[in-house]
Image (cartoon, rainbow, N blue to C red):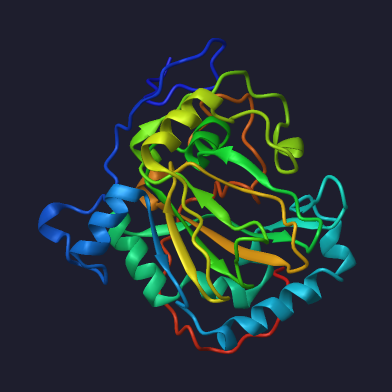
Amino acid sequence: MRHDDYVTRTSKPAERFMRRDPVVHVAPDNRWNGPLGEVALSNFERDGYLWFEGFFSQERMAPFFEELEDMSHDQELLKQDGVIRDPKSGAIRSVFDMHRISSRFAELTRDPRILGMVRQLLGGDVYIHQSRINDKYGFQGAGFDWHSDFETWHAEDGMPRMRAISASIMLTDNNEFNGPLMLIPGSHHQFVPCQGATPDDNWKSSLKAQEAGVPSQKNLQDLVNRGGIQAPKGPAGSLLLFECNTLHASNSNMSPWPRSNLFFVYNSVDNALVQPYAADNPRPSFLANRDKPQALEMHDPYRDFRYAKSA
């Protein structure tokens, strides 16, 4: 049997424990080889996330939201497995593989400012593990339960180490009423094993309502009592970078205002997926890129692209 530093989906409750990977992976003598200074690096190590309000202009984001609207009327696209509907309303909840569907979105993954920070934090070249849009329409967008992305990616995709970062870009304003992402600062320092075996084809239900891979209420209460809860809020164009093991969730959208966020998951090329650690079969490629990692290269972020589905 292979060694597993992050055993989860156990038959009995298991104690949480300190992570066995660094938070900032760059070597100390190369720590400044990137755009982030000591304050930002220290904050990321402490909290597990960085928030950049108004990182992009709202004018820069407008074409992306318009493109998303076009996609919502693309009947062929809506039939694909990578389009997830809200369990109650039937409205679009998530669209996966955005970097393969849209050349405009693919180009955004290579934005030099984002890629420079991610490379610095992960200590080298990266590739896209997953990309998606999470949508919450006004009055109907369902929430997402508390979870660690790494726990899911480790258990169901075979991600070996905690060496990945999510970049969430706000395509619409995120406010206190429309279900912003909530995080538990400092929760990334501990791994929380989850109880219960992974059901067959769990992804088909978990993307609508997650049950497997949810931490116990006791662990959540302990971590919240220690670190609190933060919900970064800001205008369209704001950016959130968060570490793969940071516990996060979001409430339902009870407001009339939509909330659309774009997520790019950057994984180190040295952290390529293996067989899942707690599932019988890997999830589909639109959820977990199993191709041989190809390092992303920076491109001009202001180049104009038209909406075009990839071949």
